[in-house]
Length: 338
Ligand code: PHE
Image (cartoon, rainbow, N blue to C red):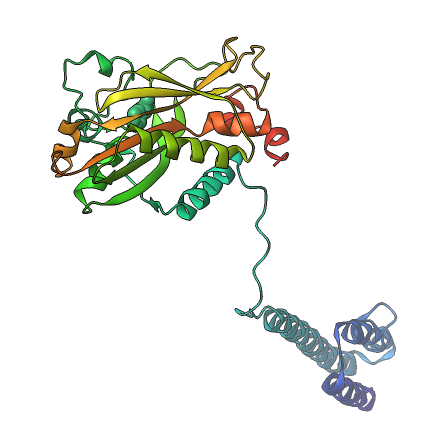
């Protein structure tokens, strides 16, 4: 029995030294310690021994058994560690690898905004940015709209607790733009604006405008009309009927409103054009002398024109979208069309 046990131990250690993987290890465990395993068989033989020898051999068998068990367990852990390390080694990163394509789609407003920027850059305009949280001064006062002016009521304002407001128009960028550059210049500034008003098919509380400004010597209404006609035909890529109506904005004089023939209904009347066949698009006019002064420009020396209009309406015309609420609706069926 003693010799058999010694041989078993030797066999076990030999096989253990060269066991290649977890499967072979499991097979070894069965072969030595399983119900029909060689050590188990020797344990069964114990009953034939004398009580004294039984005691001694029993102790040896138990010792060998626990040695085998713990060395098998340890080997399993070793195999696991090698496997984990191999997985880690596979997870290297190649930072020169091309990035994943962008998931989802570009929002139609971002698409048209990018097109507008490209168009204005091609016409020699600078693209500038302005803050969405504005002061009362830039959003109103500097634009010739004092506190008691009725024009403030036309743009229901979201006031903030810090005394600032969410800009109701992109026009404050006119003042910021003038203050930070010397004439002659021309720039546009697209961005978000906010108005605290009831939402319907053609009104949103959060929407986009693009503001434009041209300042130089000897600028007149003729320059304004010529430039806006060019811009509108470039935007649509085909001739669109427009009309210019006299209108009032405190920061321009004279002021106009530019309307398009509705591209949704072709002028017959629909919810977008409120059954009129025309879509009010741009506010525009010659920059008021007070506004030039607030921008640090001498109105005796320089003149200019400014314009500002919503981007949503343009997108709606372009893609025949009949409800402005789709833009912020978050409906994937809408988004996936672009
Ligand atoms: N800011 C005006 C609006 O939101 C539009 C405008 C811009 C009018 C520039 C004239 C000149 O309605």
